[in-house]
Length: 417
Ligand code: ASP
Ligand code: MG
Image (cartoon, rainbow, N blue to C red; front, side, top):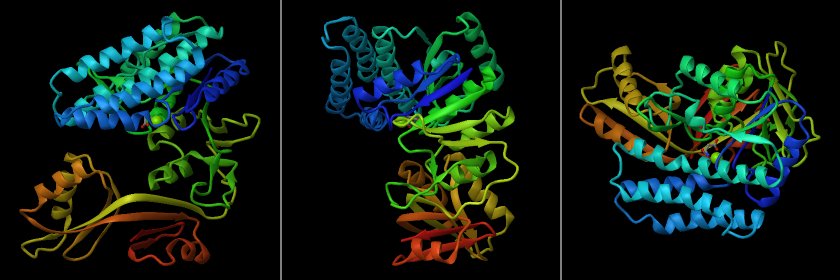
């Protein structure tokens, strides 16, 4: 079995839906297809969730979302009075029902119940396309298969239950039928939808691969494979043909947008190779990620993470930063689910660089203020260079103010203003 994952980055136009179907028709192995929300629809639903939670009107944003889906569907299927139109309207009616009710608490829970509709709509649209174009398939709700805890917006997978449920669903399907499902979403035992973290559809693909002992996972993107830098920022990128699981975990951890960081572990555990392939040129070789022991040498790899804040904590009582203080700070970070992208400490100050998720960052700062003096810089970027050279460092730091720098044997990291 093979797992295909198609992300919103490529699913933007009717042509892309056709291309997706062509790719699936060309594959002779039994396949499971994971789709994420179309285009930028997750961002749009995020806005809706915020408005709803803030007691504001969601209609304008919902109109945009409806417009996008109906426009795409009309271009694919024609007359909206046909069955597909009723199907989409039914899904939008359930969103509307939800939004008419009082917002759920806390915000992260409300968020997940709204934002999941991006994936539910994209899979409904593809389901219709497959039906209209004679692609024999079944569409399964990922929430009936992926069982999570109630860490909303960052769901943890209950592996035992998930393996059981996915195998159970698989046994009910015909051996060679195409299975269509959503990425990014699962369900907690209390019945709530729980999302797996932004860009989490890659992780969903890995979960299905693990549970079904798939032979391969193919993640389709609008680039030829994994590149040594983001092609929207660099003109001279090169494709990396082969990478080890380990290297990709490092790259993802440092903020490369290649693959969701949680994706690799389940695949590594069962040595299932992951391919990143070129959606518009499926004949290309892509990048293969596997259990490589000897990694082929490449030049520097550049990763830029924008939207960073640097926060320094200084104990108000002038005590030193020792193990106790550090664990106190980290307990609060864990409480507010803030991930540290880089840290450094001296005698009387600990500095962390985190992504500017301001709801969380502000809560953290409020909770720390009684005991710590807090210094704060925003609008920063975190640059990581794997296998750095002096030229590579100069290229990335020129004309910028270096706020923090860390060099290890393989990796150079800079927080830049
Ligand atoms: N649609 C979700 C997001 O944009 C999940 C994904 O794309 O992987 O974050
Ligand atoms: Mg997406």
